[in-house]
Each structure stands twice: as C-alpha cells, then as structure tokens.
Image 1 (cartoon, rainbow, N blue to C red):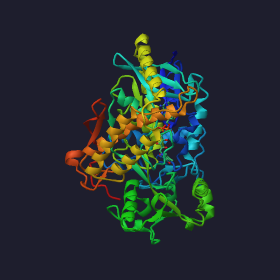
Image 2: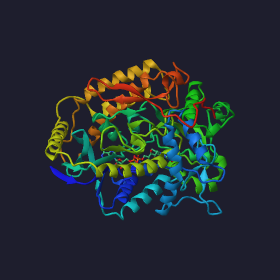
Image 3: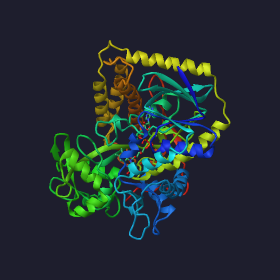
Image 4: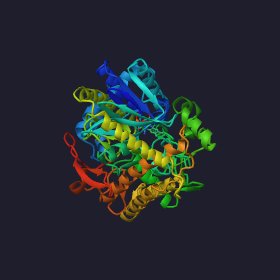
Length: 571
Ligand SMILES: Cc1cc2nc3c(=O)[nH]c(=O)nc-3n(C[C@H](O)[C@H](O)[C@H](O)COP(=O)(O)OP(=O)(O)OC[C@H]3O[C@@H](n4cnc5c(N)ncnc54)[C@H](O)[C@@H]3O)c2cc1C
C-alpha cells in the first residue's frame, strides 16, 4: 500500500477545506498540506450556494446586531463566545475573498451590495448575483493554486481515520480511479467534508452530501453534537429538491396557497409580521400547516404551494435572480416571469455535526473539523440563512491555523501500527466489494432509510414516530451487512463508493433519530407535536451522541451563555 507523508491532511475541497488549506500554508510556508477530496474540488456542494454570505457592511448594521440575530435564530442554543468571534471575523473574511477575486455585487455608489435574508434584521447578506457559492469557490480554488505545497488528491475517498497512541495520524483513502488504497499520513487532520442531507428523500443537497466525515469521527470515538437539529428550507422544487434560493423572498417574492392567498401574512412569528422574511423553520412549519388545512396543491410528488415572482418583472429577475429563472425553466418547465413556481419544504442543512471547540479541535488529539461537517456551536437549533458560507471561511481559517500549531508539537506515530490498521480497512473494503451473496439491494436500503427519516424526523416530530425511526434504522444497519454489490471491479467502482456512503449515512441518520427522540421540547428546527414549547429549565444544553457497538449513547454538554440572555424567540 502506498504511503504518502504530509504535515496536515485536509479532507474536503469545499469552502471550508480550501480555506483551511490556505490558512495552514500561510501559517507555515515550510509545511506541506494534502487536500483530499472525493470529487474535483469545484464540484463540492459549496458551488451550488445561491443566496449569499452574511457579514456586516452597512452603516445601519453592527456586530452586536449580527450577533443578536444569530443567537436568537439559534433559539439560544448557540455558544455565545463562538458567535462573538464569528461576527467579528466575518467582514474581514469576505473582504479578503474579494481580494482573491470574488466579484461581490455592488451598489450604484460602488459599495458592497447586501440583500435581506430571513431572520436578519437588516440587509446583511453579501452576494454575487445568485451564484455566490460558485464565485466563492472559484476564488478560493484559484487562490490555492499559487501554493505548490498544497498537494491535491482529487477523487480519493477517505474511508477511515488512522489513530495511534490516542492521536490522529492520517487517513486511509481509496483512489477511485484505480481502486487502490493509499495511506496519507499527517500530524493533524482537518475534516471539511460537508453535510448529510442525503439521509432524507427530499433535499437541496447534492448526491455527495452523505455525512462521511461525521461518520469517520463518530466511529473514532468523537461525539456528534446537536444532531437532532435538521434545517428544512421552505422553497425546494418538488421531486428533485433543487433549491430556489431565499433571495427570491429577500427580493420580494410571495408564497401563495391553493386559494391564491399570501398565507404567510396570517402567521405572525411572535411580534408583528415578517411574512416571507420570517426564518426558515417557521416558514416551513407554516407551509405544512397549510397542507394540513387542505390549502396545498397536489402534484406527483405530494403537496406544494406557490412561490410567486411574477410581480417583480423580468428586468429585476434577470439582474438579481438569473439562476432561479434557469432552474425553474430547465427542471420543471415553469417560467417565473409569468408563472408561479411550485415549492415544498426540503431538507437543507445539518446544524449538528462533529463536536469541536472554537479552534475547530475535537476531543481526539490531532483531529479538527470545520464547515458543515462540524458543530462549533454557531448555529444552535436553527441556522440563519447566509451564515453558513461565512462560517466555512471563519472557522476553516481558524482550524487551519490551529492544526498547524498542533502539528508542530506532535510526533509522527508508529508507521507499522498505522499500516496494520490500513490493511484491516483494505480487508473490510474487499469484503464489501466482493459480496455476491446476501440479498439486500443498496437502493432499497437507502430508500427505506430516507423514508424513515422523513416520517420520523421531518418538520414536525412526535415520540412514536421518532422511536419508530430509531428501530427502523437499527434494523437497516443489520441489513446493510447483507448488501450485495453487482460490480466487483476496482476501476471507478461507483457502486462501492455508494455503498460506503450508505454506511456513513446509516450511522449519521441513527444519531439524528436517537438525538431527536430524547429531546423533550420544541426548539428551533426540532418541533414536536407532543412537547410544543421550549424548556430552558431542562433542555438548554447541547446533545452529544457517541458511537457504541450496542447502539448510540447520549450525553449532554453545557451551552456557553454570556452576553445575550435567553428570551422567547419572536419575529
Ligand atoms: C443548494 C444549496 C444552496 C445553499 N445556499 C447557501 C447560501 O446561499 N448561503 C449560505 O450561507 N449557505 C448556503 N448553503 C449551505 C452551504 O453552501 C454549505 O453549508 C457549505 O457550502 C458547506 O461547505 P463545506 O466546505 O463544509 O462542504 P462542501 O462544500 O459540501 O464540501 C465537502 C467536501 O468534502 C469532500 N468529501 C466529502 N466526503 C469525503 C470523503 N469521504 N473523502 C474525501 N472527500 C470527501 C467533498 O469531495 C467536498 O470537496 C447552501 C447549500 C445548498 C445545498
């Protein structure tokens, strides 16, 4: 087995991974950084972000306001020192990205243009038309190319962390092209593998978002934090789940039910009425309530409501939302200039993830995580739209710097022991690829997992349905052992990759369901029909979920409060 040696190994080539790699190399230009990605970096999910990235830019805004909106959005489950650091760094990171080539949209006077986003009290979201992720990732990727000590390993699928003497020493990666395993050693490893939306049937997430990094850390003994909090985005296309960005509402779009009513006007989120500019969890719940009241419309993929942009006019749509026009025309044959777009709530983002501190460090020495795979404590029970791209930059950069500092003081580990672990991993993968007996079909197990998640851990939850999801997932994990793969070849064996991804998703899905089933309150995205209110007395703490061969083990961790007193979340 080939052994490759670097100082820092970054797993992931999205916004968080590339930002971490650049920060690491700038921290110490003498080290080498491996950037390992299962897809070519520009195909990472970051590329599909449309709406924008948050940071204060206007005279009527302040760090205090951005911080308050974020903590309130989180339903007070965020760690406040993390928010304070985040809002301070956010404008610096977005400005730096501009210096690296990101073409932020501009106002007439040349200042940075900002748009409204749900749950933000002022226009705070920086954008580059509605192709923000594309421009951000391009700028990061191009900037990273000037560092020849960032060495890319594209189309390498990381299957395991290598741990020796209590510290992470590297990873095992499958070279997708050849089917051979490689050992990539590093004195620190940063996971930047993104989210896990594909655990659910309807999601805005790309097919590659299968929670691999969460499963890697979980299996190595690191806790997954706040996994019960799964964000639904109110406006996905039925069927594919393709996202129609929140910027459509920021620019003045309306949601309408089967009676043609702008129904959100009826839902006040506590004080006054924000209608379409309410936060995502509340709007998603309002849509489900419309469905339940018989005011949805019926289509081949279940019920939907309309997102109406027709009153905005073609010129504005062309200037501000050209990608939305393209998506609606291409994928459902609807022209938003003249027709409303059918939409439904779809899974969008995981608030939970690998438990880290503000440095991105986990409890396993040498292991760091940043971006959507991580739970640094910024988003609590509900993330505000457009905070996530900025989070990738702010905490990608910090974890890159901190990983270098750690690596400086750590040793290389026992190569023979690491090699033995990698050989074990090789045997596991050979066994999976070689399975011709057993009767379970991959697509069938995946479909049942996704249905269990939608039924048990959807927009509204209750004890019986969450418990049922936990039971189904435990059974599906058993059935996974009986998967049969039709493709035994080594070269570009995409069936094998899909099977490895399904294994990760089953672990992640189970941690979501088990974490959800034990939290007896409603907070942010975790909305229960049987416990309808927030209960700070008993539940103002993070959920921790640990791997155990007998089934997930649940624990808790205090929330770091401070500057902002918990209060009722009203909009
Ligand atoms: C459609 C859509 C629109 C969005 N719009 C916005 C928005 O407007 N504003 C906002 O703030 N947020 C938005 N989000 C959320 C935001 O885009 C993501 O949270 C963020 O981009 C995640 O970046 P990341 O670097 O953590 O992961 P990703 O960009 O998902 O990258 C993950 C990387 O990890 C690699 N990887 C994964 N598993 C493995 C493995 N096993 N081995 C090797 N490599 C692996 C992948 O190859 C990839 O390079 C949106 C999300 C979606 C889905």
